Image (cartoon, rainbow, N blue to C red; front, side, top):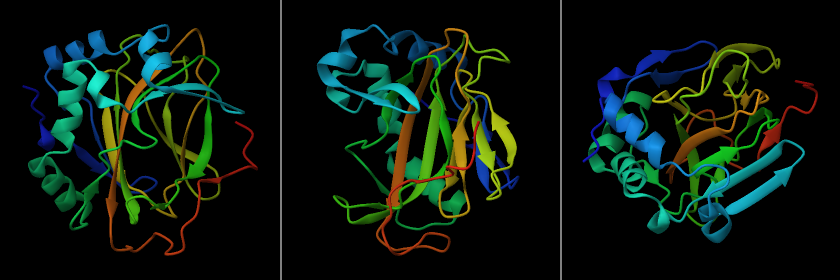
Length: 226
């Protein structure tokens, strides 16, 4: 059974509010998740997942939890549990969070070398849930990362100035209240580095401060050249 140390998350408001942990799971548990996370060539991606090829690179995504290795299923179920949702609600000060059971746009993700996510603001509304996207949670599954390999999670000011970076190291986890003032991106991966992560999004039926009421798609900072 996977257990999480919710008290390991630390808050920072630079350049905007976010919570990070470098050891939210026990070492043995993090290594178990690493070992069962499918690599780039695994047939699970082509048989049950999706592949996205865009100007930002190539990404494989798996949201079908039934075919995921059990430790990955248990990880996702943990962050969907009532106890963890209540803790996140208290930390981000949003009541009645809704988890997206379909894992749309999240779940398991792996990016090939050369991939990048330019600074952007996330889409703010899910039509199927009829709810606003208000919290992002990301967990990283890479023990082969080192400085210079790219793939860092980057936090920006609206001026497109990069202020803070979070390395995608195994057992690094972050979550934040997403909105109009939380631009973020991912630096270009290099040196044969395949960036692996698990993404979960939380929603609210009520619009909250900092999120436009009118639904919009992802907003990219197209003037940023990387």
